[in-house]
Amino acid sequence: MSSSNGVVGEFLDEIEPVIFAFGAAITLLFVGAFSLNPDASYEFVLGIRRWILDTFNWFFLLAMLGFVLFLGFVIFGPWGNLKLGDEDPEYGFLSYFAMMYSAGLAAGIVFWGPAEALFHYSTVPPLYGAEAQSSAAMPLAVQYSIFHWSLTQWSCFTVMGLAIGYFVYNYDAPLRVSAVLTPILGADNVDGAIGKVVDILAVFATLGGVATSLGFIGSQFITGLNFQWGIQLGDVGTILVITGMVVIFTISLVLGVDKGIRRLSNFNMIMFALLMLATLIFGPTFRILELGTQATGGFIGDFFQMSLFTQATTTSASKWVNAWTVFYWLWPLAWSPFAGLFIARISRGRSVREVAFAGIGATSLATVPWFAIVGGAGVIMQHTGAANVLGPVSEYGEAVSGYVLFGNLPIAGPVLLLAFLVLVTTFFVTSADSSTLAVSMMTTGGKEEPSALNRIFWAALQGAVASILMVVGGVNALQSAAIITGAPFAVICVIATLGLIRTFQDDYGSLLLQDETNLLGKSESTGGQAPAANVSSHDDD
Image (cartoon, helix red, strand yellow):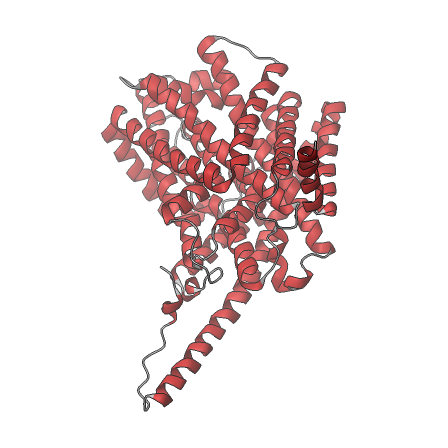
């Protein structure tokens, strides 16, 4: 009994009451509205989604491109030598990258890898005039899927992680999303009313963004059971599948970062690489390499054109760019609070350059080959008639594409299909782990290791959000939730970027001045022989 009181007591003592109460209340209100009046709630959410996309699509495109350009300058410019704190990094770079990749949209990357290029092959993006399902459409289809999932999508995570980490470890701000406001409010005032509003929004956005992914992954299992074995699950079955996933990631979550998330992330990356390599070997190898090379070249050459394409001449209701590119930017923006907080949590002691490169450089080096190989294999097999993937996709939805693709690969098809399902699940588990940990940190005032009860509470609430949205509104409701929760964080990420630019300028200038002062002192003590200043000596690379 005393043990129980101790657990509950720890939970009650650690929570930040305002952020916890309002974050949970808004989420429960959202869930309750959908439960009691799903039709009206869905129409209301859909109306907000349309207004956001119709009014601000240009802003989201510009903001996300701006994040990429800023991070590119950080990687190659002098600011990259600055560090997040003075300690040594907690993890080796490979484990660090694996956790960052797994905490991001890796589950979505695995889910959409076999599917997205097929959609663009079937209906060519309006930026290009190629005929649908033609040879000319093939590289364009793979190119656009690479564009949607590589550099840009990871940029908001990285900006948020850099801002939180830098202000926490260098300016003693609390380990919360509101730390990004440090240049405006000061580290001592981040805990005020404005900071609390940002953290409450972050809790709600995280739950909406993760619920979208949980629903996607749940739908993949439900669709697979129906497609492969004719098993149809009703609403109860859907809830049971999502509940099972919640239980799995909760177990890993309670084990903590080192025992749970780190080990599972390392497993994920090994499985990811093996599945990608096996697809290349057992698929049409040389056709995949040829198509992937052309698609990657197109992605590089057309990057700015694709980034700024707003489809301005088309009516709002039919804009392809809103349904695809803008949604793909708002989904990670909904994830940016928790992904950024988790990145900050594991980045102590790293240089700014390392964080920026791991965030958009290393992740792209993993993502581009995945879509070139897996997406390219699907398009080639569809175009050559080796497999009919589009037929089942049109009947069952995009979740079935992986079953058809891997099931039709010769020799190792069934094994690869099983590996695909395992990988989707384990990637999602690590994403859900890190998101729940981040929400727990936000609602405890920045505690790095929140209590198990706190983590279990938020894990259960995430499952409830996903289950109800899947049952009453399906994928459209999930996408709407991601768009609505992601939109405010486009503004917050812009504020974070501007704050970093100002702070990096000041800190880098102070660093140079300190070096010059130290060198001047050495020069006087050694008779005027002073070496040139070397700012890179502060880098830990």
